[in-house]
Length: 476
Image 1 (cartoon, rainbow, N blue to C red):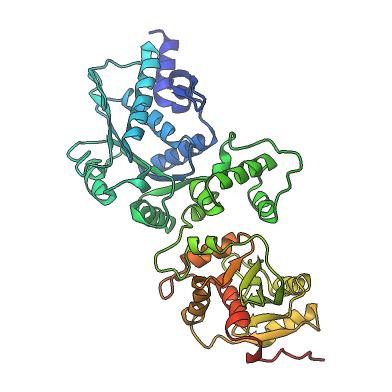
Image 2: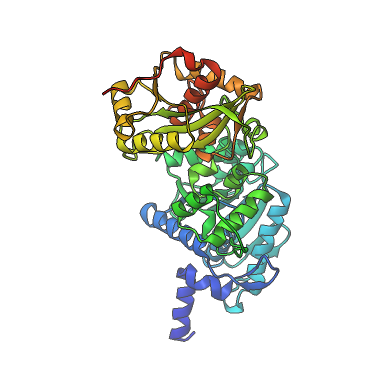
């Protein structure tokens, strides 16, 4: 080879980002065969893995992402590059379904067939499950996570687990195939998946990584990094308040909000969308938790678009002690009741606010809905709560309530109202509903401030009633 050829060969070996678009081809969603040009998600994943490798000498990563973001494609390409440029490397790919196994292995074979001849290693064997490169003594093998013994007994340097949250026998595979990867420099384990809720091995490993425990890093890929996840804005399209807040929080284009709305309809609800196309790691695992007092199906089945004539409306406030991120949220909801004694949740305005801000917001909601009173928990400091509200409106009807029972005891009667079909949500309240289906009495450590506000409102309207305490009089 000439010096220039040697320089190029060395760069192809050492620079994956240079190698991928020049030597690897993929079949796109439209069926075309094109060079592999790394997208934003793939470049971000590559950066995170290389940072860990530089720091520790190896890769141990969990990749949490949405559907069709190219993380499996990236990992296959990364491993193909390594096994075709190194001696003695064995890559093993384990998927959740035979169809996925066939697709990923077909991708590897396409890499090999379209690889420039000068960079294509000599092939000793090629069958339905493996590629073996004789002169390099390296190889590439796939399997499906069904048989409990798959991968066991092999010596593996590179391991890719695809859709790990959906593996059957996941614990057995970790005890088998993953243990075949030695704890040595240069080895890599990449486990990627969409979420399957707050259960199973993948969730437990991600939760540990988020707590900073163990050697695995968590790499999260939000759905909105995909440029194709957009739709043209139809004439007359008007974002809802929820959509406007979501757009502002993540800095999205209106085309992305249109795509999101269509996908929510396709997936039969926003909660399914959030699991399949999360914006944050916490959102991906927002599925209900066993032992929670409320269930998603229960809330969804009682959801309504409009409400009947309401005979009473209250604003319920569960205050917090500050306005910093580390402080608990302030629970702030609006609820009404009709003549048939059915409750209707009208708005959830909870958030992290200073006392001045939550006082102003509570009064604004009180006026907006023509509420009968503001019901506020007094345990935080009854006099301060009342005075904070009265700074904004001296004439607001304020009822202070005291938490003489634990959260579980207060919440159970309200949960029973849902079981009786007497509580309805007028719209979707994502933050509150997440809290409802993930708060487990006597187990959860987080304070459920939104739930607390919901409980105070329902208790006032449907359980204790207005006669249990007098409205705080105006103090001059």
